[in-house]
Length: 373
Ligand SMILES: *Cc1c(COP(=O)(O)O)cnc(C)c1O
Image (cartoon, rainbow, N blue to C red):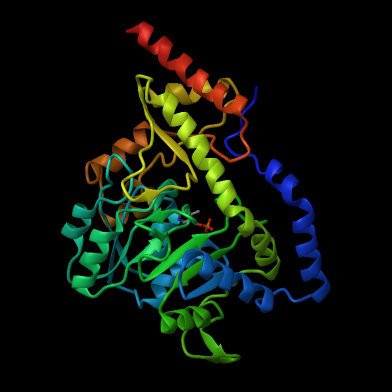
């Protein structure tokens, strides 16, 4: 049996007709840039997340960049964030000439460690950017508390967590702004790149709308230099169809995750992911901590089970960020997670047989490892 880390084909097969109709509608109007379809989808995302506004942009990376621009982050400013995340959380900061300050992570949730955030926030800190990693929200209350005391915004990187819940509220509706990605592998994925910024702040939303259109509120009059970064009408049409299915798919991921966890709890050598109190994860990734991670990965791949390391190199140790002066030992928990974690297939269309095969194979590996000792 072969189990892919992610297979989008069965999902598409289930909604093919709906999606084709939505695409054809856009094609018949020949209106591709913004317009009523994008606005409708923006309202739907705002409604889904429970924010007043949502602004469609070209990618999750641009959502982060534009949100920081709308906060006025620039040269010489600092932004506190986590090194255990996808690259663009941090490139959005450095692109603006600002400096990322790396907080360590919580070894249980892999999300940013709040005490570490508190220690790092200083005079020059212009924003805090927590990431809701793998589908689970970071512990936002203490972060928002620190930000309030300093009068600085919190920009949520919610790219992996659409639909995730923290203490009764959705990811992306907790801070000043929430940034989403519709990259195909996210829980709500388009037919290409796409992104969204959510916020309750009307002026902030207006500035985002200007920034995504070259910094112009009125065509050909530019208040500032923005980007060309809009959500395509075609993507909005596809995503609008998919949004109706999102909760069902997220439930499917959760069920698969819980099935794994039940089996792995009894297995020596594997630490399953933990949902923190008050959090509902949408499991964009199901990430275990494993003994002999690299050997396990090889073992699974030889048996045609897809798996991946998210992320092998924490961002403070990346070549391109060496100029920041970071080094080994700065964020020990992030570095340990990079050595010990492995993502297993968790997409909603996995069958019981798939899941059983993954569990058996991980068990087989751990069994042989135990015998060796
Ligand atoms: C996917 C992702 C991004 C970037 O989104 P793109 O749409 O690929 O630009 C940023 N941050 C995190 C945590 C992500 O998972």
